[in-house]
Length: 318
Ligand code: GLY
Image 1: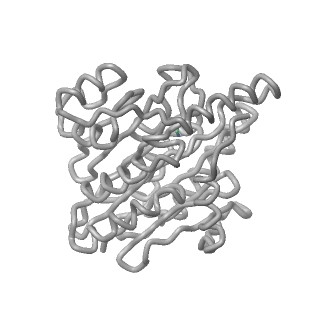
Image 2: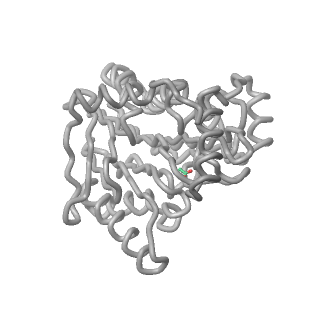
Image 3: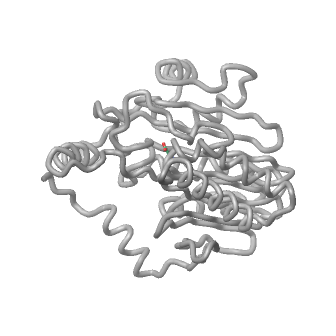
């Protein structure tokens, strides 16, 4: 059995490529890295890699992580600037016995030493988004902290190796140096090849409060199906946050177990995800919570066409 599941529609091209590799007996580490790089390289996805939205100082600071579920090798970078593929740097760091999670200049120094590709990740389109948002915030007093669509994935290969990985530009207009859940093990991702893996997207500050990816893997270890584990973890964290703090940020989780069964849960409307397994061609779903259960629906061709049209539409400066 093999499989790969990812947050958001933006992962579809990546998981399609990765599924070809997995079909041919490819490695879960190579497949997940390839899939995430595909998202990082696409300039129209504005929350990951090249074209990602900047922080309040108009700098693109990126977070990424990689974990191997066989060995528990784990590497991450946070607030890294000017490198094309943070996921590859995170994977390389996962091989280090110590110093495997690096931030900002330290991460950049490591990436330079290892010969990773340097790139200015701030696109003209992202600059327009930034300037528009500055104006909106001035005019309407809306919060600058909207838009945080991390790509998070879990992968299983034919040899039963599992991996998890994330990549994000984090919150739009975040404070310089702000780190979300995505490079934090247990919060943004976790994987154990004997059990399964999970990964998150949403408001990092709230996802971290529940160590939610680890919690889902723990529930799967107790015997829960990934769908049940995701629903329980998301509902409970959402409830706890509302009780203790008055509100809960966006929480969306994907998971796959070591049998290739998958699950997804969210507390928002319109969460999309992509999945491919030995039994299922790459498919994009939309999901929503109805009475404590997540109902998944295959995205229509119209929805998919509209998605790409809106992502690539010319952007007007306000
Ligand atoms: N979940 C991504 C972030 O909060 O940075």
